[in-house]
Image (cartoon, rainbow, N blue to C red; front, top):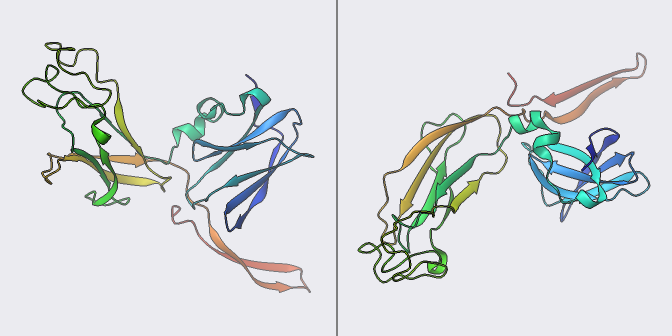
Length: 244
């Protein structure tokens, strides 16, 4: 494994109907250029004549770009944490996980994740929801959780007599996971609940997550005036909302 952040020059990004094309100069003809967007490997390309073009579906104001030149056979490898430790420490995504336990949930139960905006006291935005056992996959039946989910033997599940009396020993390996889109710095309230098929909701787990990430860039750069006599250019822009 060999990678480097040197010899890479950002040349700009251009929007088009299908998304955004990011261009970068690369001084390494024998390597592939990777592009990480807010900590995730989003694209890679082999440079041609010292330039690489990488296409993305969208770029948000809160996205942060990282470039890395890697060996050809490592193009799909994820080296973000090792190559960009400061970036990894200043992540701008919220990650929520809940164990997909054998006991405690039934087919029809839905996992719900709510978040608020930065500074809100309560999480009211339904950010994500999904079934615990889509099409019954993973739900267990008679002999597995006897007396709780009698009659359920879902796909991939342990059924009658398979591990009766063992409870959940050795299981609980799977998790439900939600990862947010990139977000600006701030403290976000989070609420996680489970709702059954009849609309009954569990007692919610509530917490908050603080993102100490990079500020969003300034925008709206315009030329106010130019005085050819003094060769003076006056510019104006909108300050980053994350810098006071």
